Image: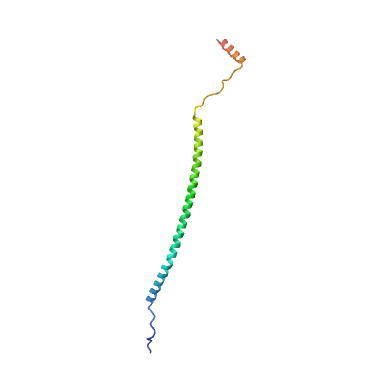
Length: 111
């Protein structure tokens, strides 16, 4: 039996696992920074799109309200016009002279 003095014994399993974990943690830390930035960028893009959609929707609502407001003004004006007292300008019918003569004779006979 000869002793091996030149070669080191392999590291215990625990040391190897810890070394792998540390290396993975460093790799993840280095990789997470760009990943975090990308996720933040994507989130900001989504928020921006939603904000643009909301602004567009608000513009449509304002336009619709303006249209309804002008229609209501017209209807209100029509109602006001209907409620105004109207002067009677209808001409008094002129009866023919013969008809007037007959009416006056009938009135005299009844007396």
